[in-house]
Image (cartoon, rainbow, N blue to C red; front, top):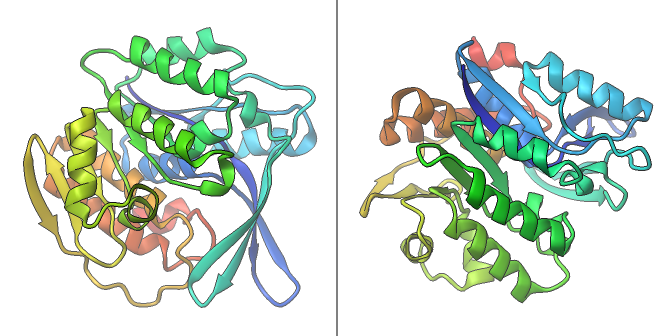
Length: 302
């Protein structure tokens, strides 16, 4: 059975429903990507998530939620003195902002059982992580993760990275740029968002972003650019993929994550980059028409 493995954080999500009321779910950028990939992948694919979990009631509910979605997390370490992180979505129209409570998140200790993680990496056809994964780790664990991925990813497997730049998670912006660049340098696929790259790396155009990551060693760079065309640099060739306008947008939370999940699922099944972009854009277009990070499976597969 083929495997896609995501490494990162899942949190408790609170999203607005009515005045004074909130809905509770579970979400986090890497987990969200796996959710959308799981919806699109056939039963011959194993979708796995490596994180850290507490042993409190909410952590147990979170693990049950993940497993019930068909995403395996059973061998992730249990951190007895830690609890899940939590975030709240604030909407201004369809645009979102977030408040976070994650200082004692168990996911910050996901490297506690590194040998188990390396065994999962060696068995995987695609391994995915994000800049948020790296930002929540200690400096030592961040280095261990990147070095371990470099040493344990199979030669014929894909390592995919979304920089997903969140400056509030980093104490030092120079270190943030250094770590993101190192992660990209060991990755086959890089999935940046131009808006973030423009601010934090000074890129003037999406082409500049793609060329910078190509120079670091990535062979497939997908530059997401909101409603503007998606730019692909693949094996040295540029292509532009216009985005079909979407009506009924209510919440842009997880737009990039759903794009990633749709992209990986199609790429792994067909190895067709252009078709994978179409699937990714379609998946993101569905996601932004629902509240919260996760669209129910039945709405994704109907």
